[in-house]
Length: 323
Image 1: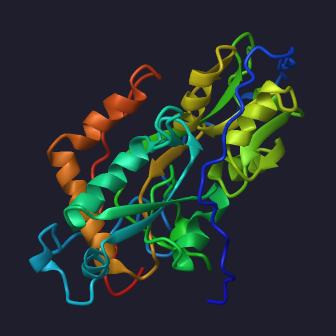
Image 2 (image 1 turned 60 degrees about the vertical axis):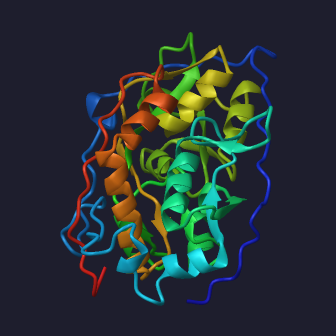
């Protein structure tokens, strides 16, 4: 696959906090027939194999014990090198962002990656590469990173299109919503018809917005949406409720409203065709489910953001000898 190398940003972009600066416009509610409003949907089933987009490869004998790994496994090579290279967000509060006091990356996705690294080998160094939404798949395909944990939605196209990658099992279930001013009555994309809505390039939220006939303002870094919103360039932001919760925590005049537009299952991105590494990551996630770690991370980072989802159960079924 002839894909050019993408330059990956090594430091996180800062999000300018402008809450209360200037008067942002208030959304105008558009009257819409009920059929125009997207209802929350179940996770898609892939026509290529009849499996859910959340289905992954069962561990089948691959565990966190190095004796279960093949000699040429990615885990063994990483353990020998002493370094795991990962792609993460740098401006998604609660999931992957820099602590302003320590300068260290922190969040739900960061903690998931730390656990995976620990299971590969004690003292393993993690090299974080901050990337945007559109860079997630190319970074894996080009070999710039070995894992991506970046609020990444598991979809059929991402399993099967020309930029296909592997996914772990699902570790969190988010939902696409809208963020508007707290005094706005808008709760759906249909309510915001004809008005500028910010969404990140390469995101499923942008694809859904376009499918709804929305008027998007695209940004490469999702954190820029908060700046556009606070400066009044857009009337709303649409993204995963996890991302929007971080924005709302930074802006007292913003609020996440309405029901989920679509179901958004998160998986760890892994290089295409590296089934054994995918199985290993799934073995780690199985341990994190059984020992309560995923529940603790959900409580730690998402408490206070609304009703918390249950920790997703693992779904398997993908064949080792094919996608």
